[in-house]
Amino acid sequence: MSVNVASEAVSMIEQQKDIGLIIANIDMAHIDSHSFLNALLHKEISLILISPAINTKEASDLLTKTACFFLKKPISENDINNMWQHVVSKKSQALEKISIAEQQEKVTDNSALNKIEAFRETIKRQETRQSSLLGKQRPFINIFTTPETYQKRKIITNDETEKKREEERKLESNIGRRCYIWTHERHLRFLAAIFILGDKKCRPKAILKIMNDPNLSHRQVSSHLQKYKSQVQRINDILPKYECRSRDKTCVYPPDYKYPFNVSDLAKNLIQSNTLWHSLRKKKSSSSSISECNATVETPKFHLGGKLDLSNHSDFCNILNKPSMKVHSVPSATSKNPSFIIPPSTNSGLRSNNPPLLSGIPSSVGASSSSFETSMNQLDLDSIHIPDSYVPQSDLFNIEDGYFLPDEMDQMDWVLPVENYSHHANNMSQMDWSPSTENHVLPETNTNQMARVSSGENPVGIVSSEASYEIIPETHTNQMDWSFSEECFRLLEDTTQVGSDNVVPFGANDDVPIDDLISFDPDVNGEYDLDAYSIPHATMEDHDQSLGVNLGSTSQQPYMMESYGYHNVEAANPREAMEGVDGFDDIDLESMVWVDEMMSNIAHDI
DNA sequence: AGAGGAATAT
DNA sequence: CATATTCCTC
Image 1 (cartoon, chains in turn brown, yellow, purple):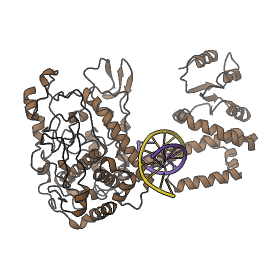
Image 2 (cartoon, helix red, strand yellow; image 1 turned 135 degrees about the vertical axis):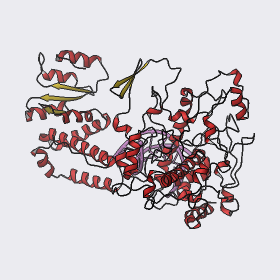
Image 3 (spheres, helix red, strand yellow; image 1 turned 180 degrees about the vertical axis):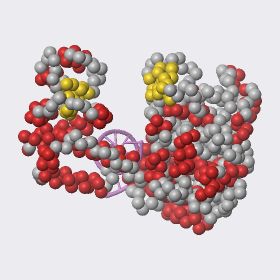
């Protein structure tokens, strides 16, 4: 909001309560600038003052009282770009004010410079974080550099030496840093541990014991577990919302259905989908354009195709003899929904170098009896009963003309910019399973009027009668999302070619030890013919029949049929996808060392 | 004392 | 957001 007269601004400040930042010319017409400043003295509003020339004394005086920053005319673009930093993190600003006030007791005549120095430090910290995240340095803004600040730096008081030591301590630990502890491999171990332990026993200490990672502390596992659990919760909260937004209404749901995903069955699904992803990736790399660099690109090891029967192993036998899992509200014991998702695409089955994080969460694998309980006697991850998700999974990845971002959902950065691929390829993105904004389907029932705003060919936003949603800006669409563009995928493929030295070739560091432990074959009996899922059921009765149940669909709203979105997978049958791949059926005993370690740990625990 | 877990800090 | 730390209970 802009006003021409200062008095207008003052009354606006009085009335409006959500003002976060004021940018004002120091030379105000019709009003004494000091009375203007008094008006916001006790408000928590950041103030940036603009002046044609900066009088140092006056500036320092004002900075002490109210202003948080001074800009000298003419204002550069850089200045504008950095303004946001004055409004974010009110809390830290407040803290800073306190610490500055304390300093003022000792250095009274330099208070303004203190403030600038402190602010500078704040920005520096932010820069550090951003650059570590982005993997590159950004130019640091110079506007704060004055001879005085440099002079000030040389005066080292006891206070400051203490501060410095504190800083060093913080640098040694990982406080405030992105430190990629939870690599893909570690996370998979973590998930495996959770799966093995089960919901009730998956405590930090036990997990750590199974993971057997000397570089991890109990607390780190604890923290990771906390986050993991919160994400499970998030999924359980969010999935029902997808369901009601779904265009695919072929499912008929019990009125009281839930999403009883628990911590360990989700872990199982995630491990499984990761394994499948890697296997398909391997297939792709051996058959498509990447094949020319096959000789140098080491592909991950897998043991798909055979299950590792550990039922006779004395340790595992005990471990796996845990109580049977109860499952709530299973709509269908014979649902044909596959337990994984292949992202739809125009000409390629695998589009991302990131494993499918959300995939596999909805699963009904192996539910073949009318009983919803089972007990495990072998490490057969397919035999566990996981309830149907009720979510037509393909819809999670459908792209429509209209997108909708539910209020309660943030846009998640669960995939990485291509430029940082080499750095992050094995890390991060483990926890954020929510599909990005683009995958949100506009609910049919939504009465909110939506309009798409375009600039040329590029959508720039969505305007609704209630709110407007910004479409992910270009920098975000460059991320390795399931929905990323064809161009982006090509770029990705290019950058993963061997010879690009800032990029780790795919596979070089991607081996997943957990695969050595668990052999998945999601389609060991050839039952999951993905093509079959793209054929719509003719009638609801057919649908019910195929599910082997009658869920009383006649009493429900008859929904339109939509096809599933499993298109263009190179081999529809994952089993086929694996045929002909060397070492496919082997179980490499030498690579099972970790399994042995894990098992002996478990034995010790027992 | 030390684990676990929520909350909060960085 | 990812990770570290604190605080409190058991």
